[in-house]
Image (cartoon, rainbow, N blue to C red; front, side, top):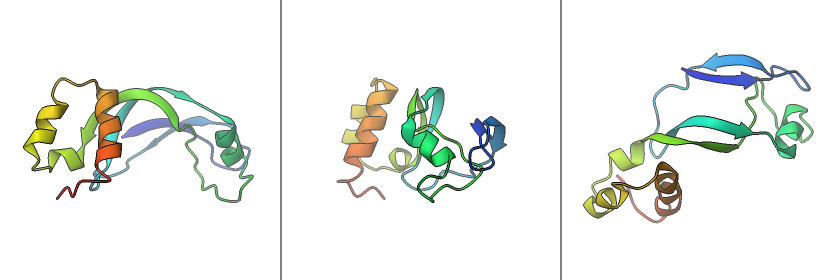
Length: 107
């Protein structure tokens, strides 16, 4: 279960919100978010200034956290890549997953 703060309507106030995202899909990651920033684009989404917002809206895309689970890496048969990940800080692992998964065919 994910605990967050969400707005339920355009211009609404953020209030506690819980939801179950289901199982992780292929090449998805789960991150334990410790801190989150709200920037101007988040406020634009809150107010639906671009006509794209869907509610409830959980804003904030600038986060600090720890990588908890990465399904693509768990299913990877690349031993060299798995050995590379051992001992790395979680933020570096997440960066590698985002950058490298674009170039690897991970079954």
